[in-house]
Image (tube, rainbow, N blue to C red):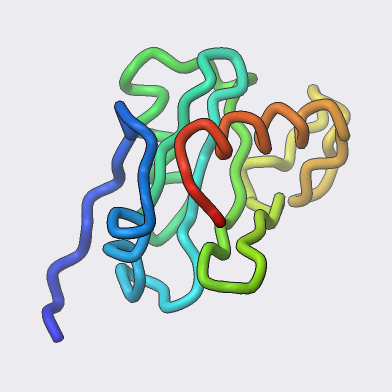
Length: 120
């Protein structure tokens, strides 16, 4: 087993099962960290912390208020999304906890993830 870690990626085309499977054990066995830009409808995947993916999106033109994080569980049956991340704590968006409280924001996260990642 290699100690090489995958970089955080912002897909430019939808990721299939092979690409998703390349994240297994890199660095976690069952999850992939993600951050979604709900305005630009793009996602950054990978890394040890959501803040790492958040930083990459900010460096490439995203605005902080548009970024929401969580975890993908593509190897569970069925594949699912967890809406929990430290980056989600923000009083200014009426989101005092780690979990995304707004159903509208969750729907935008779901739509963006579905566009870029095949969880099926």
